[in-house]
Image (cartoon, rainbow, N blue to C red; front, side, top):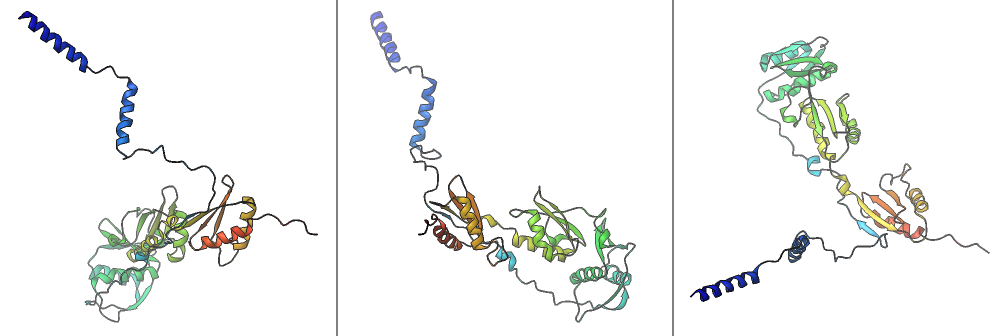
Length: 323
């Protein structure tokens, strides 16, 4: 009986030794991970893929979208004007203080204070009754004609000269123009276009001193105005703040004979990009000395074909000496 038990234990011991896992080298785990990764192609870099060599051997085209405007913002729906008006205004050489008292105090029942330096005469008449919602834009327009505006603070309106409206009274706010009360300053973050370039675009469309400041580091522009003015300014920003880089078309053209600097100068003269010509701004030629190529950037994709034609015409050696 003891012999049988000893034999049985010996068999168990031999079986365990046969199935025991040998000590693994740490590098085996990396090999196992790589093996598992080979079984799944997700997220694995294919080292067998052929890496392209240096230089440019063929023409490369990178067409853009050609979109440089927000067309939906540039064609907004027409806002209907309410026809249910019941207020008639008729001012004939009336003092500005009296007009403010009539509209802001008597009709709209708002608390207000008129600051020093506000004055003038108003002649204004409505051809048909207007609604109470239309009164505030009318009052702001009449004040603007006389160099004044409304600033809302602490539950009351301050009637002030426009030049004194910002300092000490307003702070930049975020948001659209729907919540504007009186004269306010809006901080407008820009997504694609630089703040300095947006200021240039806005300059012809805004009132004097409407662009309070330009923050290049934060890519923001600060605009001041009434609700109607800020609505127009913000709509203009929305129209032009688009991903213009994705709209540009780019071509890389390798050269065979002529050096990059020479052909770049010749193309610049041919297309007249530095002159007062119809093509000014439509081409940009960037010499790529390292790649022996020239980079062409244009907002019009079809112009890449024209650039290619002239590059191929110019990419040839000088004529030999004549007899």
